[in-house]
Image (cartoon, rainbow, N blue to C red; front, side):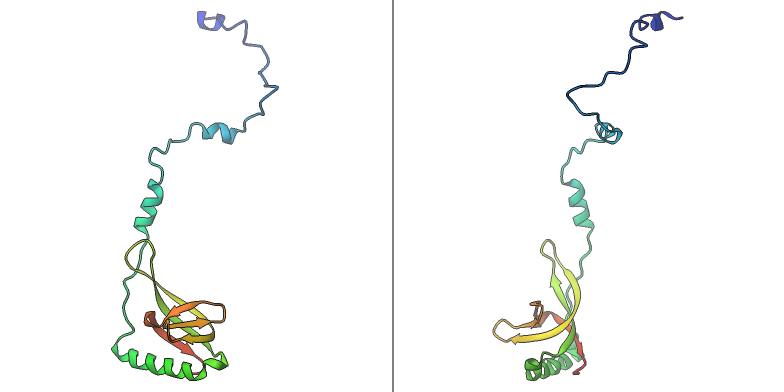
Length: 139
């Protein structure tokens, strides 16, 4: 036997210590102690936010703008009947330039001319100037 092994002979066969006051730590928790230290908190979130893509807003196009106006006029006439509509509109991003185009469908509750909004029965409010496409059985 080497000299290094001889100096541990008095403790080598002792039972493993189990604390009476502290619970046993799982292997997962024990391994987590040695995981990398995140020196820059929020850095990962900032990178994800920068990488998130947004679109630029574009209007409905000159040709379609007239058609869209006709559809909105027809909707005004039929708004009391709660017609089922589907529309696509631009919603600006709260954190960066641009936004996303969203498609929703539902029954029209009212047209708020003062605030220039279409309000669906589920209380979704769509700004009229952001609408690029409008469809439904009534058109």
